[in-house]
Amino acid sequence: MDILFNMRAFVCVAETGSFTAAAQRMDLTTSYISRAVATLETHLRTRLLHRTTRRIALTEAGQRYLHRCEQILGYIEEAEAEASEAHARPVGNLKVHAMTGIGQHYLIKAIAGYSEKYPDVSFDLTLANRTTDILDEGYDISVVIAQELPDSGFISKQLGTTYSVLCASPGYVEKHGAPRQPADLSRHRCLRLVNNVMALDKWLLDGPDGQELVPVTQTPFQVNTADAMTEAIKAGMGIGVLPVYSAISGLKDGSLMRVLPSHSLFPLGIYALYPSRQFLDAKIRTWVEFLREFLPERVAADEQAVAAFSPRLGTPGGAGLTANGAEVFAGKPAPTAARDSAS
Image (cartoon, rainbow, N blue to C red; front, side):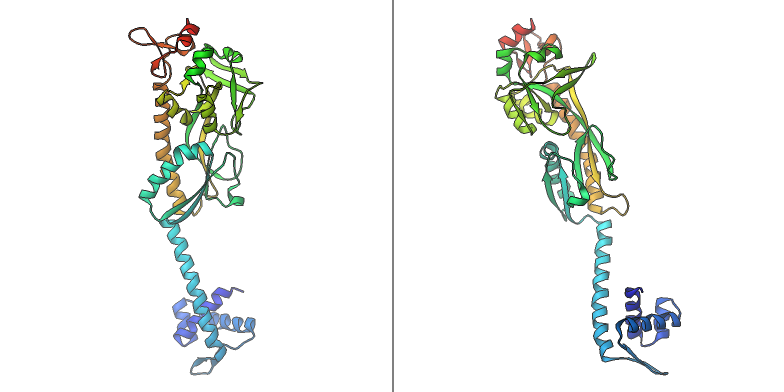
């Protein structure tokens, strides 16, 4: 039994005063409307309408039930209107999961820009370095970095690509020198960044001569966030892997320098995941569209900045030469020990 249809038929009969008029309004036959009301009365075990050959009238129970039906059908209309509006206009709360580095360095700025355009959308952002089951954990969208995505059944949109670079502090290079080639890393203190998108015990470097695998079997330090790794490298603890977005600030202010600047590692895609393409909520659709415009520009700008603040590639080990012949690291004259190690 379609209880909602039968309720609508009963309300229409009560409003129009006859089965015939109700049938005309609902574009159905009179007998169909009569059966709907009779079925409803049988279900309730209560007579709702007094029927005569000339007119119908509500019973006392029918009057009470009519009031409840009007309330219920009104709530349903409101719910349908809200749902339709959500499909057409971005409004409401958007629950977002993102991996920590991407979230801190890109998404918060993206949220600020999106909120200026769509002020009726609020955000609940969770940062965690793991993939998540969107449905089980109640997220509208997840932004992750990965070499490839598992077959989850979710819709995915690629927002961009990123990679990592090897960095050290100027103090470390002054004391220990800079590696000239990937094999030299075996003689350095290599720090390990622990997460689920980078191998823990090996670094696969992409360079001008192809790929080279460097084992990292021992380490004096490992940590599970890029920002913590950045601080460890700045403190002179060794050479570590940093995502481009985490290395930018230190390269600009000189607290970090890039080593083996012709090499990069851990190329990763940046993806937005969400449950369904059909009847997509407007706030999810516009958020994904905004990210697809926002992120590639920022990622490209960061990559250009890394290149600009990396050592020039004029000599082995990445040290370059200025116009007057002085070697530079991160846009500054190289430390004495670094110059000696490259000579």
